[in-house]
Image (cartoon, rainbow, N blue to C red; front, side, top):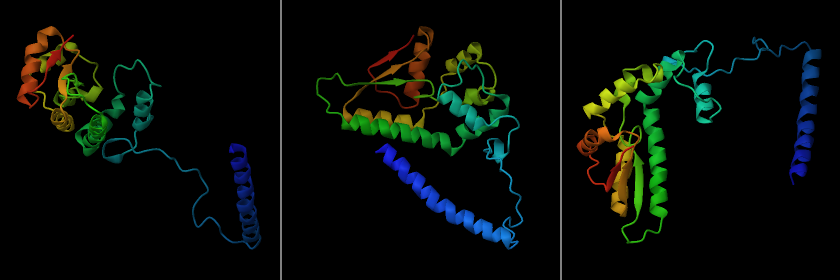
Length: 215
């Protein structure tokens, strides 16, 4: 089947190509201007990835991001300096919220499709940092990842207990409760941050869950 399709493609290409070459030959022989004032150059197909849609010299931030998400770029510690505004615009704009909405909506559709039993064993596990709670304020003050991660500074932020809930995750949380799921929060935060984490969760509306599991 694939070979047949390839053969059809080649036939179609010849059918299109021959008249096109014929027209070009005639036009050239009559001295017609086919450029329309435009030089025949390959245009730079490079995304405007910087703040306000400006080009970034030497790097395309969207390509770097794709490389990270595809795990082709590994063991990176910070984002490129040139991409600070790119990341900031994404997180502070509507795109981040839209992505979060899509992911949580699909999670809800999956949960709703399940044939749940009534044995009290239906558990949904939520991560905390950048899933249930947002540390955007901390990262905004530290270059959105341009600065190397500072565990001491981050822990000081956690101890404030002021991280807001991610809106779309909180919506999913409420929907899962209505479906009959029991909620468990799982985090890499240490035992010493259990109390402030529980307080933070409760203050932003995550006040009904079975367990908080810390590292």
